[in-house]
Image (cartoon, rainbow, N blue to C red; front, side, top):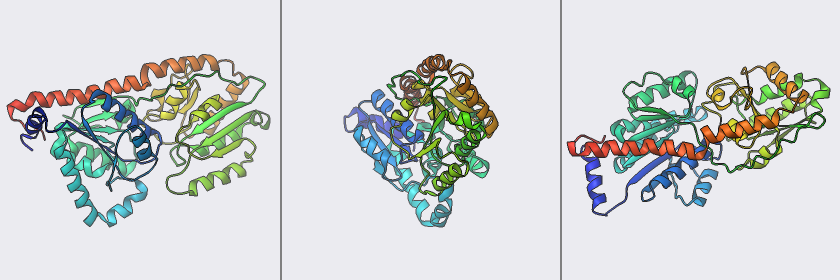
Length: 401
């Protein structure tokens, strides 16, 4: 791809086209990673107002609708996304579908001035990125396990691209990227949240919220086991909402409903479906539980909870420990430990009076570390520096690839 950047600069100087930034995302719903992608796009548009921003999603859905409302025009394309449940189908159709996907990725990356891939599981574009590594930035949000982790580590090394990690824990998961530029930027959350006072009192009910996809990672069953350990008199002082849906199947939701009934928690716990805007649930809550069993790369729910002045209880796993200042803005408990979670809930029930101070400290922490403005400045700084380096190298006739 020698001379690619120089040709782009010549055409831009002649006024024949604007800079093109290609942004590729693996999801189509409106969970945390999808909302983070929207916020990244807002930042890119603000920093590069005259750029042509190309957005590619794997299918139609709530994310595409939200982007159109924001004034973007996402393209829908059958991306090769590495997901556990879809691997058999990907492998079965690889002989036909993968070459096509790689060709589409090749054409896109060749035409772009800057490529932003969110995230490494977008296999086709990450694989092709090796040919255009100087202008490709991969934003990594995953802490996978086992074979998936080995594949993603190898894929990132192969790409040679510049990397953004969304936490220190995520960065530690991918060692061995010698020679590749890397950064840690916490996901920004665009919330103008009003920090309404926590309502809990020693006499009244404590509203506990858990929000997130229903799967083996998030730990809904850990919360249920913790609630079951509480004495009946304490459970009677709780009102719990578990909000979320499973991915493309209701089977985990049905199993969770069964567990709630089997534990005798029907009068305490309400299981509610996923909603694109969870603001009402945060305002209802007094505290938020994030009892993840497996590593979260960061933990958007814990960040949003602090933005709304709702202290979170988080598992000490992955990047979750980076979201909370233990004992000041929330609490950290061992992962997969219902007894420890139950003890923390019991302590809050016994004395909810510190909650307002936790709420104030949490909102301050959110604004300092996790606000959309803070993340936007860091993200666009990385993108601008990438462009500046390549523009500076263009006269020396070095390749942009």
